[in-house]
Image (cartoon, rainbow, N blue to C red; front, side, top):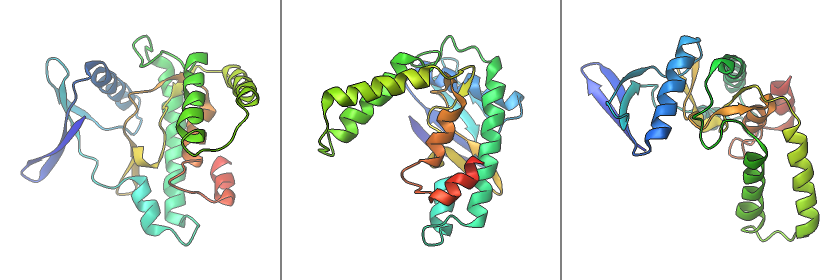
Length: 216
């Protein structure tokens, strides 16, 4: 994807060009739907006839990660940053339950976070973390654990919208508002997945006490 900031007098917009038409279509459809449901997502201004390009609301230049980094007090998140995280979690719940009305038949890569999607994630952990970090493992015992974890996740209710990449770089901060981006990979899935993605975001390094506060 290529992004461009477009200036029109005192107004600015974000132009997006992307050859992946299916991904564009999902972002456009999800954005319009969630906007109608009152969820904090950018407004889609207009699209090209083939959806290869579109113009959306400009949300500014600050991600939640930027605020967190600028205001961090040693290891602790500032009170202001914590308030933004709490807003993001409240908005996430609204999005997750509003998503029950979506048509997931065209969701990428699959309509729901099923066994195949779970194993893709777990194998990504195995091959792109454990192997690259040269962490010694017993392959057979590890596979037993991954299969057990897959079964536990697969058994959870999965009728709500799963953002899939809910982390501090996909939450924009405009004034005191939080607005979501990059949710075109969303599908049906368990509620806890996005919460875990945000609280255990490796870049954010949220201290355990503040983890618990946000979880509560």
